[in-house]
Length: 82
Image 1 (tube, helix red, strand yellow):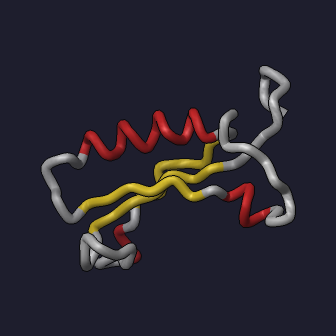
Image 2 (image 1 turned 135 degrees about the horizontal axis):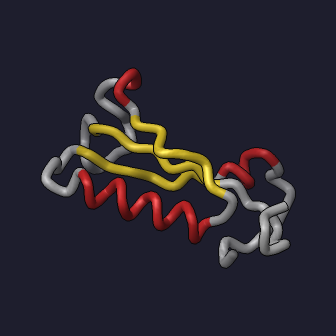
């Protein structure tokens, strides 16, 4: 549990240079930047925004928020509002 007693909904922020801006295939998997894992969407969004702003001058660079809680427990119908 987190300090504020809310349900933990894990999210991961990751990114890298894409082969095609219309897709999600990375140029070089060894260069993918794993920013971190966060206890909720709000914290992950803060990290995503910071990472995306650091690389704003590189048009091929994209960062994503991965909803790990949905992968770990696909039967859960949790809201991302936390």
